[in-house]
Amino acid sequence: IEETKPPVAKQENKDTSQQAKEYFQKLVNSLKEQINTNNGITYYTFLYELKNGSDENNQLPIDTLINAFKSIGLNIPQNDIINFFNLLDFSGTGKISIDDIMNTIVDPMNEHRKLYVVNKFAKMDVEKQGEVKVALLKEKYNPKGHPDVMSGKTNEEEIFKQFCYTLDIYCNIRMISDIINYKQFIDYYDGISSSIPDEKYFEDILNGVWDDSNLNNNN
Image 1: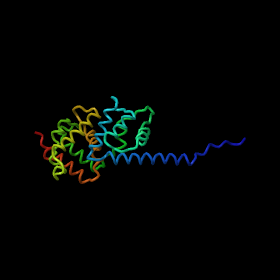
Image 2: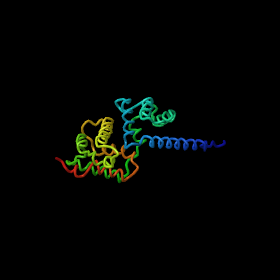
Image 3: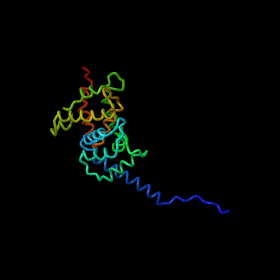
Image 4: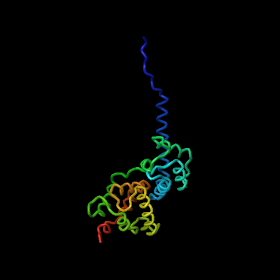
């Protein structure tokens, strides 16, 4: 009896899989480049639109994703959006989560930046509980020290408005009503950091708006 040999995997299947991975990475890189701009404003506006079209579990259909891209004025072919959606719809339910989108288009901060963020949070966490009130963040935030205010590019009111806008959207998505913990604070700043490639500019923002003398003043 002639032995039956297992079928040999075709090279073209391997090539097709590799092409799919390359296509997905290219698509994601394109989305990152277009969304992560304007000090996080575009990104958080995008998340706001996603949240508005999602259910109570932060799950959303394809139409919500398409409308969210349109709302921030990105010229992305609809086929690319559909392909992006389908690649994230792992279970084939016709819905994807906001978390999956966030994790795909935003890179975590490097360790140097994360250390800056954690250090600023720790100075506000005077009781060392690993959490602070959202109201305290807004109280301690000092727009006067932002480098764009210092240079005359914009004003304090606009910078503070942007901070409250992005923070409120983040809290809404994470269902935070009053208290934010240090991991969530890092997560929030991942969304800001992704749109700021310059290390010194990022440090100047953190040192300016979270001025140590103001953070250490607990009165």
